[in-house]
Length: 233
Image (cartoon, rainbow, N blue to C red; front, side):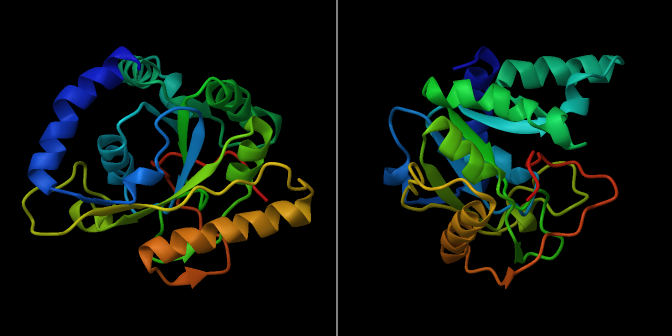
């Protein structure tokens, strides 16, 4: 486990548990060893914080590549922190550049690490669950690992879009639910099959969250701040 991640586990994680007392369901579905992908709905920047808090192992998140290239004092600090946490940079421009995230994630997964992705590609603008992009399934097939569906509930209440940090002691309930692993190994990886498997994955996420499902991609935000999903359909 990276040093900064370990420090966060010993400091930030206990603080979040004390301040928010998140409910965790289905933790038995989190593998004790071996690689896996956590694919969840995305309501808030706080999703990463609480997911990392309740998963006992190291969890690598995808983060915008811009955060790794800053030359100012703030930019260098962001690069230091994200690198120290074991984050995986992702290019939002798409194409071959975006696939560099896969190049980094596949050996990590094959080496037994855990990677978190958000198939919607951005935070939900209205609390509904939007159509998933196929990158998570493509990555799972390429690395030969299962996908663990994740349902986050209440994070948008404690840290709504625009809030800089989660707001403690608001009385809002946070729940993190893990579903049974989805094993897509051996399935065809043609475009139609990838879409079908992705829809299956999103259906499992919806079962965990109870969100209304929207069969179209979430609208892009003008200045996205959340971690990304490096693959379009």
